[in-house]
Every structure is written in C-alpha cells, then in structure tokens.
Image 1 (cartoon, rainbow, N blue to C red):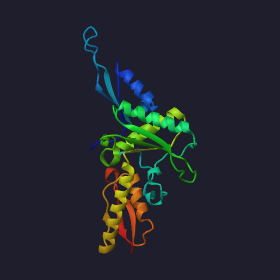
Image 2 (cartoon, helix red, strand yellow):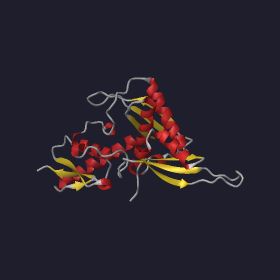
Image 3 (cartoon, helix red, strand yellow):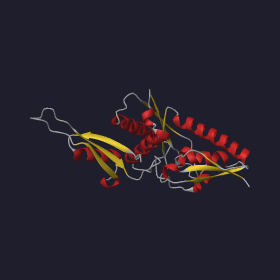
Length: 254
C-alpha cells in the first residue's frame, strides 16, 4: 500500500544535523515524525569526495487518503458550502494583515526551494470570510511549467504540501492559520469535474432506480459531491468504505 503521508527531505553534513534542521523547519518534535535515512553520507578520504547525509522526515497523523485526517465522518453531508475550507483548523483568527500574506508566500516559496522546485511562481492573498466565526483564509497559488509533481494522484501530494506549509506558517506566526494552496488552478478544475460526475451519476440513478457509487475520493472531494446533491429531492447520498476506498454512494429517494 502506498504511503501518502507528508514528507520533507533534508540534506546536512550529518544525520543528526539533518533531523534537527528538518524538525526546526516543520516546527515539530522528534516524536511527531518518522525518520527514514536515505543516505548516511561519507567523510571521504582526507576530506575529499565527502558526501552529505540525506534523511526523509515523515509527518505522523496523515491518513492514507492523503491530506489531513478524516475527522468528520458522515457529516460530509452537513458541511457548510465551502468544500476546500472544510478541513481547516478553526483555533485562531486570521486578521486582515498584509504580514500574514507575506509570511505565507515566503513559507511556501521556501518549502518549494527545499523541494528543489526552482521555476515556480508563488502568489498569496486573503480569501473571503467563511464559517460561523467568519475566519479569513490565506490562499496561495503556485504557477509554473509542468508542476504536476506538486499535485500527485487525486491531489494527494498537494494536500500533503498544504499540511506541511500550514505547520510551518503556524510556527512563524505563532498561531494557527487557515491556509489553502492551489497549483495552476487544479482545485477549481477538480471541483467542476466532481460536480459534473456527481450530476451525471445522479441522473443515471434516477433513470434506473438503483444506487450507484462514485469513485473513491478523499474527504474534501466527497463533501463536494454531497453538497452538489443536498438539495435534490430525487436522490440522496451517503459515504461508504474505509481509508483510500471511501466513496460517495448515490441512492434513489423512496
């Protein structure tokens, strides 16, 4: 089974220095990550031909479906109509402060540099208030040529990138911040694809009177499907399955 947890690769003169640097970058403790040693490094002969150590820090607490843990079960159907905000941490308020935008842009740019993504452009801006507390999210858009490596299968890499960047941003600002990262408009395109697919399958369910599942999706994408049909009187939706195989099932109304 593929491990889709958020990771950060660090290179330093020694393994201990690499681990220490990675933990500092993420703002995490040693207990909050798993460490995979990619290259122990070498001092070389008389200092010649030396090779630095390389380690991979793997952040604990990321589910197999990619992104953050699925903390809301079948409540997918009752999430408010802001699908890409639904998994945000609601523990602090983002103020209308240009410094927040600047820090977010700097954090993501620095993270891309550490990932050796050198030709990407990063733009950040404040989004619209959402939720009962009217929190203001920070949006970061990444542009460039052939950035599919930052998206991954069904956006799993993008969710991990967003998770790590949010940890780093929270450390810099010393408070939790709602952060939404997109790459070349992927999120809006994917949302439209899910809505189109959901509506097409719902039409089939209404025609043949039999339930039909959608493809497996992470929680944030399932919410989009649920919300697309929440006002439809002819069908209703439920989530079924576990882990990577969790999916939305569309049923005909009795």
